[in-house]
Length: 184
Image (cartoon, rainbow, N blue to C red; front, side):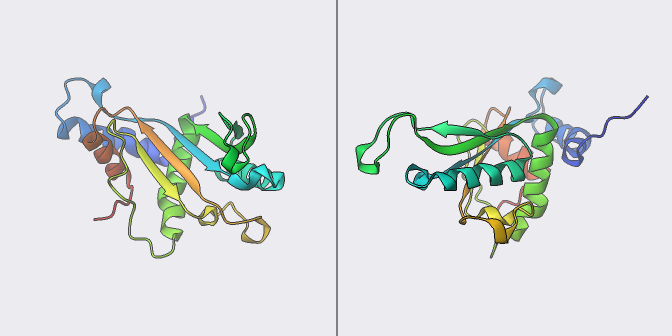
């Protein structure tokens, strides 16, 4: 029988992180141990109202970064000051689950974040009160999949890491043990 490949971060979570969290927080059941549920990567392209090519480029780059099909997001309501009409495509997002989620998290922590200029760690106060973490990335070129010569323009990304943790303290402990480089 063929053995299935397990992503490195998933293996680390199952063998090291989960038992440590179980011991640290004194859970009564293994089902209480916080884990990763999904990672949502999104990009907003405000100039897509006038230049459709920018949205197409952002979608292509997001597909290269995540390795998964991207969904285009539409404006929910019209805003006259921004010349925005309801239903216009103004962004893109992708939800990563399972092995893709673990692969992306490993690439984010081990490869992309260290490539940020003057990197001193990510902020530890970006939790939402329910153990979920939001991270803003200012340049998509920190990912090695992006060819610097072929990009339309430098744009940012939003990364939301959704966990099963109940409190921010548990979510912080989970991400810290997985290797997220929090600033002091």
